Image (cartoon, rainbow, N blue to C red; front, side):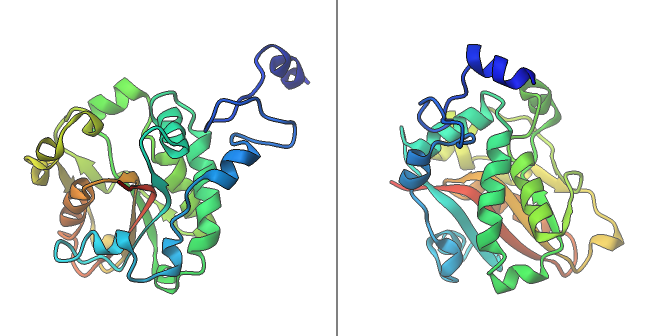
Length: 227
């Protein structure tokens, strides 16, 4: 009953363009939904996200739903999620993408979704991990486990987006570790993050996860940077 009154004084706006939302629109306006650049990675085994990790790490699948362009709709979505606390955006993107991912045969063997973790200090500063809602939506849609305790970030680091390429890769191998048991051995994990850029952070996470015997890893992200 209160929501119509709240909307009267604080009308909901699109998370992609800040336009006022119509009553039949949620989070993203119809225009932005049509304009968002979709990768269709799920249709291609040998897609550009998968190729990003060639010769670097063995992944069974890699994909992202959107292309990320500076000053584009996807950047605004990610910023609203990451820096303005709109976690419902991650849920929306996860629910959107999971319908496509259900058609990917290799993902039918996946058992656990794992988010790229924040350092506890960063988590306290931000108040949440920006990929949690996305990862939980994927896990729910795929009917598999979500585990945010297995992969840990050991060192506090500055925001990746404010670093240059050298700064993003320097010392990154030592950032992550795993806290696993025998029950984690032999599983197929889906590692999730917001944006694939250089792939260095995801590679470092994978190397940490590969300390667990006989596992498989797939990577799924909301977006992939495209020049």
